[in-house]
Image (cartoon, rainbow over all chains, first blue to last red; front, side, top):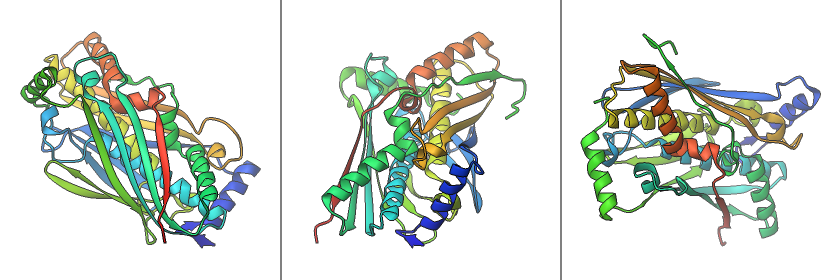
Length: 177
Length: 172
């Protein structure tokens, strides 16, 4: 059964497999990349079910880059907006709520003084996503979907909760990754 | 040096100190839900162009697996942002980087995502950088410490950042 371009039957099947313990509880999402010495600064490689792709990023000119690709934070924003929209649509589908269209706007506010001058203030002050939906659902139903979407969205979780994070630097003669 | 324009950074820094450039930078994007082969797309614009990104859930999560999923974009952004911050700080310190490769991951608890159990949705996030540089390890560690503090993507992972969401229904 498909509602809102979400395959509800597959979700239900996965949920049942998780409950029965025949599907792994955790999923590791891995991405690798490398620093570039050319027209852009960074390139990553991402694999998915039906293919793979290269992603490129670059700082803006004023911050030492070439302005030739999206800034890394634009990808963060895209990931958050998309993730939140997906969970929202999946939760709507699971409740039989039809969404005829969904448009999303998002923002990330960065304190440049904290980043460049070491000002003692939060580096990222706020993140926001606004969804504009065409639906017959009531305001109460939309509010419920919003709460469920926040709860089930890994990208929103990234933002809202502190996660232990300790990068590792390894010095090598020749790169091994 | 290191494909980082140090002169421009110093100029920007000076302008911020003088108040000639704003203290804050707002990154904005717009996207929409798709009803075809992928589930979501957005157009990102940058100084010298624009790009359209597509994303799709894997089949077990209700998509078709026709594009990277959103968490993969978040992990990419994290490794890209951290690498950019690391190399920029190295450049500001006059440290040459001959090669830098990065691997990042995010460990997601699928039982929490599917509402089977309560608990953290994301349990771990990690990055490993492999650096080829003439600089001694102590200097690279010092750069890492600064990158930990100054990378905005790392900041969103390691700190609780206010997240505002709003749902607006189109009026008939």
